[in-house]
Image (cartoon, rainbow over all chains, first blue to last red):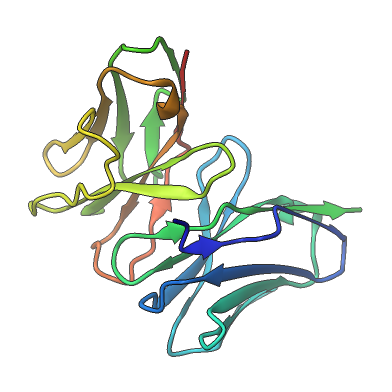
Length: 110
Length: 115
């Protein structure tokens, strides 16, 4: 039973435009949320996180938004760059265990 | 410094054989985690080690799976009598303290294929 869901398996966006990745969760106990980025043949690398006491966290081109009432978070990448082409995983936790979504493959077109 | 390393990067085995997967965490990290990613799925938590505490094995899918961590550093995940459904990418991660919230840093994974 997946507690974290990424319903869009893929996303294609033009270079310079905004990429919006979505994630839904079912466990109301989750209070820490993360996004990881993964290139082929590499492990996931940490991108950005947000605590449940916030509704927005920004780091350069990356912003994560959290809507606790809707149990929904999103990652905005703006402007999108070719190096952003990767698989993005949403993860959530209420302790040391992370629950991951299945990932969204982002392709940035030149 | 060096990141999390795992070996082998790929492992092909026959059904019924035992396999050992190795993880070297980041130096100084006290917490170590194993996850696996089956095709089309997210990462699934398997086991967690923190210092000298008893490991949290709640994610291990069957008693064919076991893991140990020697000297608080290197960890080995062992799968006995492998089955085809064990085919997946096995990922190891480490974190500084294992105290929530704590960023987990992942290795490149071991791709296991059971024929």
